Image (tube, rainbow, N blue to C red; front, side, top):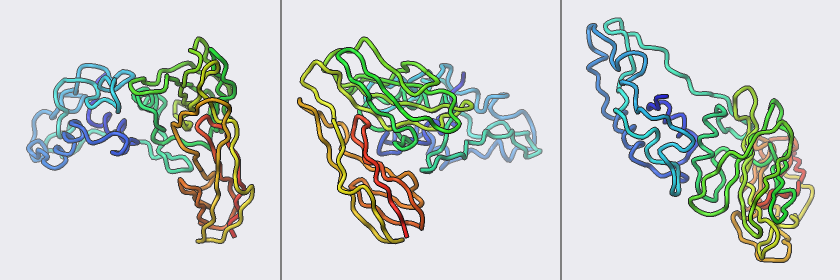
Length: 317
């Protein structure tokens, strides 16, 4: 299927320039916005620009596939869809009548954290294009609370909690390290998945996507865990400085989290992290500083790279 400018913008939407720096395709889109061609807009009649149903002649001839632009080294590919003619500047109008074809309206649905909810296919393309050890854009911890439940020599069991409205869960996995893209391991209607046939003493990373009505309702934070039988270790427990916290609106308080590990060498893919179940009531910084936003209560999740966590109840007065 064609992969045009709008498709690229929908795919690019959740990727910040910090995650994926400006590339040639981004520069092309910017140039089109800065120097539009008005010739077709002011025309008194004639054929629709773009040659029919597909704006601008139909874009590239290749399907975007699982990894837009081929991926393969570092960030998502620079040239989604590969090749083909440049997308037209003015998607098919109706000549002198000044009318245009209805545009595809991007989804305006968002989760509790303001992340735009994408279709299952759009989010899957984002996930499989990631080839580095980092959290995915739009991922959250509290919605799924995904964790490595059991790490054996040749298998890994991942568990999570149910997400309201989700009918299935898709699990993606990869070996940790650069140039290892996520691949789809399978889908289930339950809350656990076990991958077998792994190498002992090796770090793997996993992501769980909750799906409902064709939409990706939530994507977990990346779970990093090592199989047993080697020198690599996983976090064993999370400790917090307090289990309850009261804070006034507009004031701040501190939570300190730490990790206990099993014997062996722990490779750090992500330092201990913090997330609020309701950022509108109380937000929390990457260092554990809680800020009261409005009266109410919520939970702060303090979690390790393999997904184990401790909860801190916060009351804002």
